[in-house]
Length: 157
Length: 157
Image 1 (cartoon, rainbow over the protein chains, first blue to last red):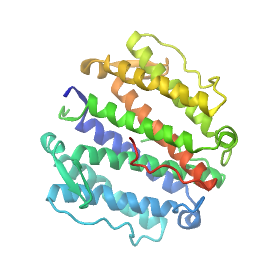
Image 2 (image 1 turned 90 degrees about the vertical axis):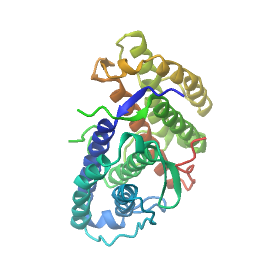
Image 3 (image 1 turned 180 degrees about the horizontal axis):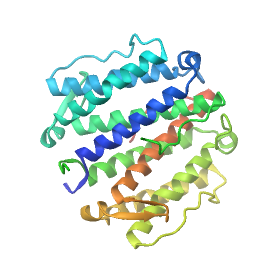
């Protein structure tokens, strides 16, 4: 198996945090009511998708660092845009802090995340980010459907 | 700057090809007519989003490997689902072949992709993948809106 490096830990974290900045801008674009009520085709509301992200990224990192296995809980008690954004912002520095506590070697080790996803830690991290891009893009379609222009995809700052 | 490795080239390529498999399944779920005509909120059709992906991933890799700078052309002459899928499949092994021609050291070098995106090559590769996840997720909403269940997000095989 080739071990040629592709991305450093720092590059991955920077890309993730850049995407988190974009996701935050996407939340901000939603009117309060539609954030919690609007959806298409029986899908979840954007606030529910955001609660999923809030319940796996930092909680997952905390479990990995503390060698603890807990269940995720997507049903978080945030019922206003302000509350969602406040939790988003609380998690931002903690995600970097906990991510940086995981060594290069440990990233390659298996961890049974949430007692359900028994994969190498770096693979679980990649899944977090891919999942965030996926759900945020669904929010883009909601916004377009509401006649609101989403942020530019490259606007991560 | 930390140089601790996070992902190997092989891991990144496997993740990308897994996502390409999922995107292919998403194309297959669309009825022929809706693939080329349906959209939400003034967005592009799913076939147009797929043509964007087909016009940047492999063409970008070819330009990087050949040290050539060309413009991308999203307006590809594929007007049936069969033609889109045939081009998708043609590109699959070539993406791996060209990606593997780029050395670990070269991945860190800047390349002015399409004469427009002057970033380290690995960063342009990450952008290809993130962009594919983003557009495919928009196709998921189109499918849900059409009453069609999209493939599972983890179904990359």
